[in-house]
Amino acid sequence: MRLLLSLQSPPGAIQEAVEVALDAGYQHFNCAYFDQSKAEIGEAFKRKMREGRLKRDELCVVSKLWNSFHAPQDVKPAFLKSLTMLKLDYLDLYLMHSPMGFPNINGVLMPQKDSLLLQSDVDYVDTWRAMEKLVDEGLVKSMGVSNFNVSQLEKLLSVCRIKPAANQVELHPYLTQPELVEYCKSKGIVLIAYSPFGCPALPCHGNPSGENSPVPLLENPTVKEIAQKHGKTSAQVLIRFHIQRGIATIPKSITPARILENTEVYDFHLTHTEIQTLEGLDCNTRFIKWNLLGMETHKHFPFSDK
Image (cartoon, rainbow, N blue to C red; front, top):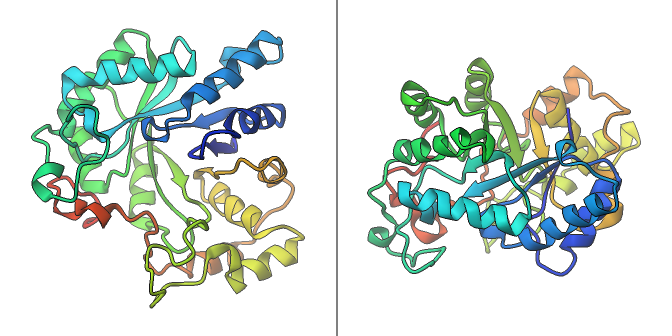
């Protein structure tokens, strides 16, 4: 398993973080259209290649098609913009950011909180077919999705010409999604876990009052106890948890020490009991609040199903 790195971070320190990660042996870089940090990432790739310390085929670069560009005619222009910013000739994996399409209104990335404005008539199947053409043209090696549930994956698999290689979703001990995990494994779809630490940047996990909110995963007593037993950090235990479940994970960091720390997860092994204990923390808590803009009214909202 590779250790993955997500760079959804403020600009300024991105290029340095990518260069540190490359020197540490990271190979898989995940970036989304919405991150708007591709220029710095691309510059880091270019610099390391220019120095002769990196070859393109040693990288696995992932980007995403944002929700505003689901209309088939918008897919390729949005993709090419990302590719240009990354200073690359092709992407290794291109994901549909979610099954929910937004209207493409003068480049507005996030519609206002109005259920009508959030709705798009485009079916994600039609978006997928437009993405398949990118593979045909040699611009993308593999395709995948993000934030798809089982029903949506079943629909896509029933009609697609190119099978989705991956599904990137929120996964951590508070949200283990066992049905989705088993389904993806049964179909040979690689699961990629984002927010493996449960979004520590959101102390109340999207609930300002803190009512009924679990303690942050990195501070959870059970996680800390297991980490102490192995002489590791809570973050390392949470990454290892996914690795042993056969799930790739993309921890986010721009701190050099933590970038290096996140690679030190291959010299210990969680016991079966410890894995079960961590799975037992599941309280079906989703930290990424997709419903903040009223997205739960979208006809393709994926989180009301398995």
